[in-house]
Amino acid sequence: MNRIFINLKIALGSLANYKLRTALAVLGVFLGTLSLIVVSNLSTALAKKTAAEIESLGKNLLIVRSGIVRRFGPSISLLSEATNLKLADAEAIKNGSVSVSDVSPSSNKSFPVRYGNTTLINVLIIGVVPNYSEIRNFNAAEGSFVTDEDNQELKNIAIIGAGVAKKLFPDQNPIGKYLMIYRAPFQIAGIMEEKGVDLSGVDQDNVIFVPLNTYMNKLVNKDFISSINVRAASSEAIQSAKSDIESIMRKRHKIRQGMQDDFAVIDLKDVTQLKSQAMSMITILGRIAASVSFLIGGLGILSIMILIVSERRVEIGIRRAIGSRKRDIILQFLTESSFIAIAGGAAGLVIGLPLSGIILKLSNLPFSISLPGILLAVTASVGVGIIAGIYPSKKATLIQPVDIMRM
Image (spheres, rainbow, N blue to C red):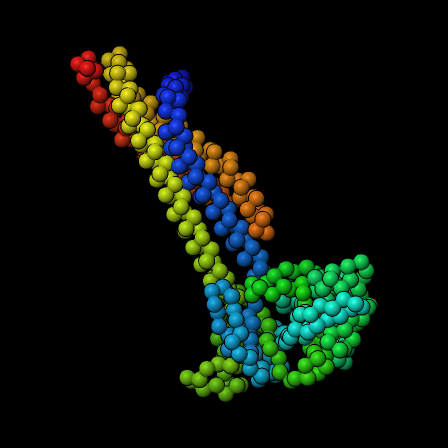
């Protein structure tokens, strides 16, 4: 232990003579460590947010959407809407597949909404049945949700999103009051919990739920729906449920082989896989940047150590002459190169953790610390120091006392 402290003291004195080069070498390792820690924490936070988004949309959820749907990256776009998705299709799906545990038909359209002198131009009105809240894991925070009685009797009741409540009723309790959806009055029966933006970019707090039959008969006067929310019996049954749904829908809609479907069965896990691929690209690019920084830092350590060996030939020769072994010389220079790398790694760790917290807060992502990322960053910084110090330390052991006496 005493020898280690002596070597460290010698290392500090030697590196102090090359302040600029030492600082540049430390900077390279610092940037590499900082990049790895920030990118790893960011990737972990994004993964957590994606998992939370999936869970918030509903467990083992499949969505049958009418019309032609295309995926563009992680988002889903409706190219054209069909008019032949009916309530009977939902019943057929529920009764036609053992992999399906429940279904909930729904339909939606944007309408202007008014209360008093305040008008919201573009609010998504969603017609639903009572089990929608269970299947989509979206519940009323106050009041009640749509009931069977509301739906059967075509009642004009509304359950408003948290965002709508804040905009229309900033200083009062809206339950029991009436608002206008287009030209029809609806009594507010409940307020939904805050949900935020879903995977498709829809603000789930800027919505109003009404009974599906009320929606179809009084708001849009149509007998078709836009989507069917399907809950698979288990996560393992999702793929079989999807295959069964596609088969049932093709048969009911008389879609022959080779014809284009007038519906789409959306598995949210497919969407999140695309999102995960995008996150993986961010991680890969971050690690490439970190690798370049570590390489620059390693080259900086290598160059400064070679310079130190060249300028300390006399010291090395004297140490060899008085009995220092080769391993003592190697240990000395590995200590110096490792100190540079560890100093850069420690600085990157100290700055990287709070910087990650700031970035995650500004990006509205859950705070997350990636322990594997930190371990990788620390290991990489120490490894760079050892690898960069091997050649100079080997070169130092080749210096012989007799060569110094001839100088």
